[in-house]
Amino acid sequence: MNALQEYLIKLIKIQGPISIATFMAEALGNEQHGYYMKQDPFGQDGDFTTAPEISQMFGEIIGLWQANNWLNMGRPETIHLVELGPGRGTLMQDALRSMKIVPGLLDAVKLHLVETSPALRRIQEKNLQAYIKPLWHNRINEVLDITGTDPIFVIANEFFDALPVRQFQKTETGWHERLVCLDTHENLCFQLAPIPTSEQMIPPVHHRAENGSIVEICAIGENILEEISGHIKINDGAALIIDYGHDAHGTGDSLQAVKGHQYSDILTNPGDADLTTHVNFQRLKQIAQRIGIKTYGAIPQGSFLQSMGIKARSDKLSLNATEAQKKDIHSALNRLIDEKEMGKLFKVMALTDHGLQGVIGFEV
Ligand code: SAH
Image (tube, rainbow, N blue to C red; front, side, top):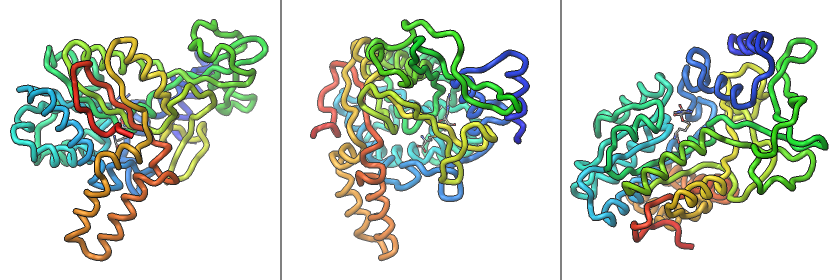
């Protein structure tokens, strides 16, 4: 049993069961023992690999997507480029390299990284020092406090899936929150709260769900989306959100733990494995639309990348490559766009102000 498990057992003994959201927040973000706080989890030797770590083409394409928006906005003098959860900074490195080809763009960019992990901030600083000096923040509202009336460009890849969710299960006696409790041997276990939650907590679209259905609510993610959408509505801008999830109001328990590229037990040794849930793009889209900005998608990652010309980019990279490199480029392309790999499960959604024309990547 690791130190965080011991701590959570003590905490539950003292104050009673905790929500799944509290458990996730501790497992990922506990200052001392949280998963992201203590290590670099990415790559072959790590626990999982993300799209920017698979190929430079991913970040380059995202950079070009935002560059196109900047041109269509009439080249604003200042643009605040914000990345949520930048990992190693690989995506941003590739994006800035491709943005550099548009004259004047990098001079206009002020870079903000929203990152809570000191370990990852250090890696981001090292990887980006040749390009631009970023400002780091713990939360999006710290960024929006200083952007004034300037437009923002937001990028978030595999960020929303790491945010804590609460889970509620429908039973004959109503909706009950799923909690982390102690069993008779004082081990962590899942249990439903004995007292039902008011149905008002549950989005109306689920009220007629069958008994047994589990609904996940990511209040933090919804708040972040509201903040971004509010700023874009008033001061203009564009956001690109990429994650795995569904573009319909799904039900079900999507919480999973991954360690060393394998699924692992959620409650054993928390903080040693990554925890994620599927992102509910439909819900995020509704929030943005309610606030009054334009939405695109969510569409499959494979469709977005192909519409953005990833095949032509991989052909270009292959031109001067060795045979071994050509094979790598082809295999990376396949991992990013193939339906059996990341092409379908991962989705791309964009948010922009109503005035922005010529948004690319979403033509089907
Ligand atoms: N975008 C990167 C990394 C994805 S992993 C990539 O695609 O490779 C999730 C990232 O979000 C990590 O950088 C993690 O430290 C950060 N993160 C997780 N929860 C966060 C939170 N609540 N606030 C800010 N950053 C967070």
